[in-house]
Image (cartoon, rainbow, N blue to C red; front, side):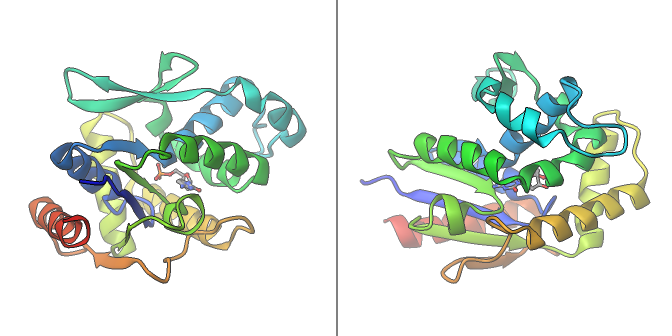
Length: 229
Ligand code: DC
C-alpha cells in the first residue's frame, strides 16, 4: 500500500503532537515535530547571545549562522518517542522551557528561518509515510498532502494543558503567564507575513476541547483509514 503524507496543523498546545505521535506509531509512519525545529533555532539564538535582553534579535548574524543549525530526531528507546537533537546534542528538555517558548514565535516569523526549516522538512517527507505537525504543514510545506487535519481547542483549555505539562516536568509555571504566552504566540503565528497559521481549504477540522486522548486517537485513525485504505 502506498504510504501517504499526513499534515496536522493547529494552534499552540492543542494536543497536536500527542495525536500525531500516537498515530505515527500506530500506523508505522515517521513522526516529525516541526515546532521542535523552530524551537531549536530559538535555543541556538539564545545560546549564542543573538537574542538581546530586550527581546530583539540579531537577525543578520542569525541568518549568517543558519548553516550551523542541524536538527535531527532520534528514537528514545526508553520512552519509545523521538527526541530532538541540535547539532548532535539532545535538547528535548531545553527546547520546551518557558524561555524558549517566549522567544520562538518571532524567530519562526523570520523568512530565512522558515525557508531553511521548510527545505529540511520537505526533504524529510519526500518519500511519504510521514506524519508532521506544525502551523503551515498543510498550507506551505506539503500543500499536496493526502490527509490534512486542523486541530483547535479553546485558549483556556490549551493553557491548562500546557500548564499541567510544565508542572509535571517540575518547571516553575504560572497559569496566567502560560495563557498570555499562548495568546501572544497565536497572534504572532497567525498574522506573520510568511506562511501564517491558517486552516487549509481541504483540511478536516477537529475541535478537541471536550475530547479525551483515546477519543482523538480513534477519530484520527478512522480518518486515516477512510483516506488511505
Ligand atoms: O508547536 P510548538 O508550540 O512547539 O511550536 C513552536 C513555535 O514554532 C510556534 O510558536 C510557532 C512555530 N511553528 C511554526 O511557525 N511553524 C511550524 N510548522 C511549527 C511551529
